[in-house]
Amino acid sequence: MEIRGVTLDEVPWALQHGEILAFVRKYGSGHVSSAVLRGLLRLTPSDLNRPGCSLLVARIRAEDGERLAGVACAMDYGRTLCVVVVHPLYRGRGIGARLLQAQLTRLGQLSCRVALSQVPGLHMCFRAGLYASGLTRDPHGKALLLLESQPVLPNIEEPSAHNSKEGDMVVTPRPGHPDLVPQ
Image 1 (cartoon, rainbow, N blue to C red):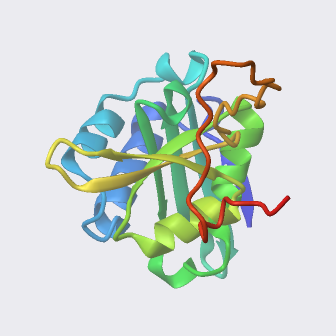
Image 2 (cartoon, rainbow, N blue to C red):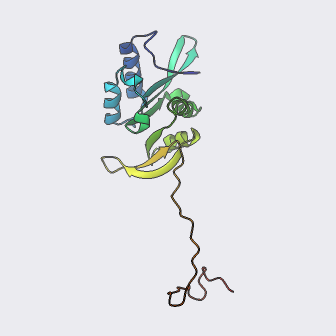
Image 3 (spheres, rainbow, N blue to C red):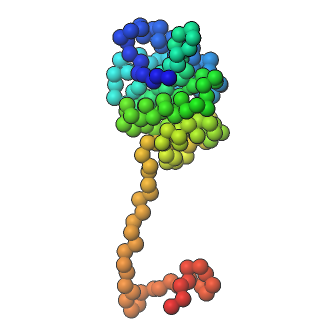
């Protein structure tokens, strides 16, 4: 299997773009939204030259020539569009995770939103090294997990030392409470 970026060197854009759109429509298993399809449809060669935009394909050599096994597209580092589609015959072999890893290597950062009900998609993102950083909702109210390339750690401030003075109010836990430390 070979993963490579879509270029205009060998094959005209219209042919490559048409093949990719047909692949996503056919093998997206109904999980690719119409908004994502519209984003892919509007994709132009000049978009591919913008920072944060990448279109990758995974091809497998077969007896009758090369076959498209998977597609991954990210726009605006995945914040505007992040989609991965793998042919059903090749699912479960790590192709989707490798496509995401290739996107991450190429772009340096990546962000994806995956429906909580899409367990294989979530598994693929975690396998590619993405971290869960929050929950969000799509326009229809469906819960989505936000996955990003860098772990987002909460900003936890170190407790500052505080010495009580006469007149300060001191709160102590009630007896038997787990916070009560015998002295």
